[in-house]
Image 1: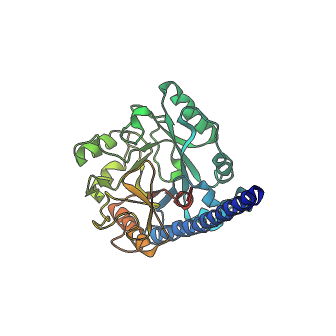
Image 2: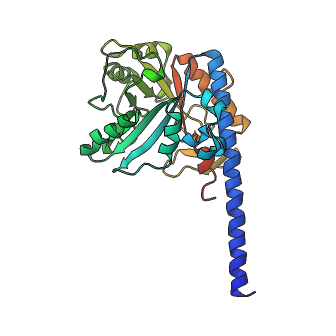
Image 3: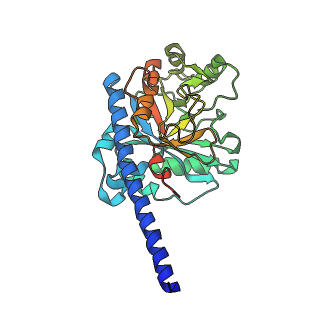
Length: 315
């Protein structure tokens, strides 16, 4: 075979696998849209005002995840807001990517919450300014708080208003790692002594699940205003430290545990459309979402909805 024919063959093979990967991603995006819609329907049948906030993956709000194909109304109706990480800062100042274009379309309809990562404290005020200029609620974490372990000493846009819905939120706390607290009550007391409009926390302190009594202590700000408390839940990757993890599980066993999550040694991307995984997340009294509902949270924060893309990236 000539060199020219060999190059053409290699290009054809590369194109074939590229098209195959794009088809997998497109199919998975549709499945993630349906996953979020179904779990939202389940939650809102039990608690009609329950708040659903997916993190990242804002493209899912559009048909075919394409800006030019219009809004996916079923998905948009199923959720109450959008959350994103690192829009204007990922350590240092960056130019916002295409997600900002998508957000400009949906922000008249839904609350936008952005978590920025700022290494140099001198840029914290700029991160808040850029987000507030867009009408986004913002949480800024510094280099010592990359994994959401700390309560910042100050609150931007502090107020004593009653927060009765997600649209009322002007600021929020993102604290899903409680490693700095030795007891559950110490964590609860630290959270109680803040004036954040919204608390985003985990359902568990270590392996102990928060109770309705715990949640009631958190639903009033220090200044007396009512606030919202939201639970974190990872729906796109399995975490091997969670209550549902079984001792014989590992990569590819069960088969729907598909891929290592780079940078997170305790997580694996999953085929989230698999019924066994869906049963873990919602739809029954033992499911993760039912535990969150029973504990008295006002809503749920869905992490890793963009797994539809990363499940196939570089594969």
